[in-house]
Image 1 (cartoon, rainbow, N blue to C red):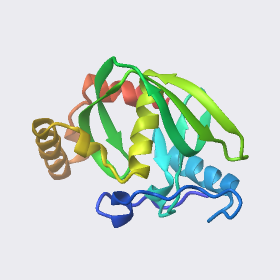
Image 2 (cartoon, rainbow, N blue to C red; image 1 turned 90 degrees about the horizontal axis):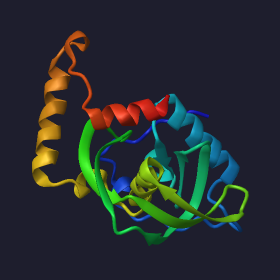
Image 3 (cartoon, rainbow, N blue to C red; image 1 turned 180 degrees about the vertical axis):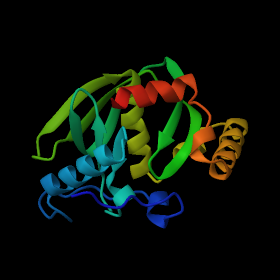
Length: 183
């Protein structure tokens, strides 16, 4: 089921989420996975966390080769190499900010069917995982941007709101890479 996505000012987005309890779940894990996946796809996102749809638990979905359901995620290791790219967020429409993150990560999480998985992600997949994990920790991607880039991005959003759709600017190269990955 496609569900509404909460906006940036909702208090749940600033809270650390509790672990998902498979023995006493707040919601069926497969149902949560399906709702998150359908909502993410409908809104052309790269990932979506449970708290972005108002569910207080540590779970998210993300695009990789397929859509992965991630419950109780942990980062086990990170590469020392960092990469800076623009990130957007479904709770912050049209706001793209430059964020520095590790190029690769090793993670452990539980799948919707209760199986533990350990994986290594690189590039965009690592970035999306970390972005969604930040949501579960109550951290917005905007807090990871430097002040100058954040202010520039906010000014652009204000300009976009004032313009008719026919004169919107083109996406930056980094934002276009993100959009191309959605296709």
